[in-house]
Length: 433
Figure 1: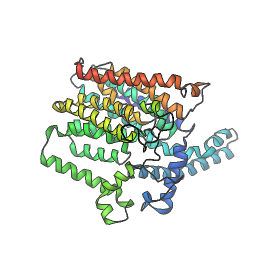
Figure 2: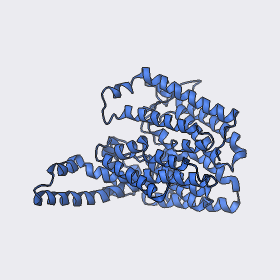
Figure 3: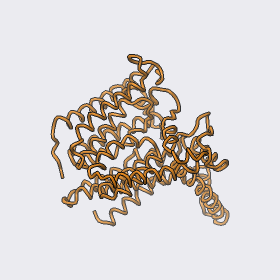
Figure 4: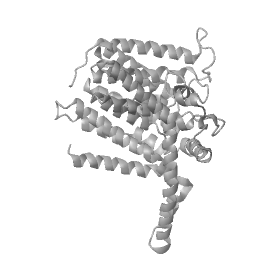
């Protein structure tokens, strides 16, 4: 693929997403995000996490997310006024100008919301570019391979990333894109850039924490005390800088990890499942709470946490001696991420987006991982469309919320997870690199 084709794909993806951003917006943006940024604009960052912003709920998004939302809102407000005034001027002075275009752009603050989605759309683009460059790096001895181009298109035009970012208005892809670039710089042995980007990803959304064990498994392959100290100082300084405007006391400013933990564990409710199609969706149909006894006196949250620790320990021990094999470490993470989704409580339907692009790297071990990527894309689309059925297509919203359809689909997901774990522990896949 030449540079012209590369840039044309990026431009086409960007245009598609910008157009879709004007169609509809989820309540996450119109209610929560807007309330948060207006709270910041009125009272400032100081003490933001102690204030109740909307529906008696405090924000549980880390500082970088708040910076992104606030900045995009400020820019959006300024540009929206300019654009609407410009189009109104054209409408008044040019008889043939389509008046409906002004009405379309001016409806329900949609143009402002579209501007607030631009960081998400840019993240989609950079996620695709990051995946592409990692593939190019790993395939530099096989320049004829089309896998890098396929991976790029699979991200740039993936309905899931576009739906969540350009339509829904959620920021889930931003930390994923930053994490992918963090892995790219890790692969290139640019450790300072890598650890800085990983810090920013964590400070954007805490869901990225699931990648940490695998990141450090590869990071520590060339362990030196100097490298470890330098990396920690970058990590620490980034956290301090991000949290500093929000903290009231010098102690909180110096020890920001306490605040991060408080934000990361600030669950909006104690439901076992929040419409994520996993094992708990089947178990908790009676409205089971996450803080009540479930099995052997354990709460569902504790029980799922033990399962996750066991799974993590098994995978880490299995791959401990393969620290230098980037592809195997990334593939192991994608499988553990799916394991986490299946067994963890209190998850949203969008959680699988965090690990979705990492399945693509598994194709370098076994091309069949691409079909896993396709299936998981389809799975997430069903799950999120069941939560927010836009656009509404006939009886499809009812079908994707029908337990007689969803329960078998969840079983297939669990069986796929079991197959992937068995295959990667019992059989050596044919490597393509």
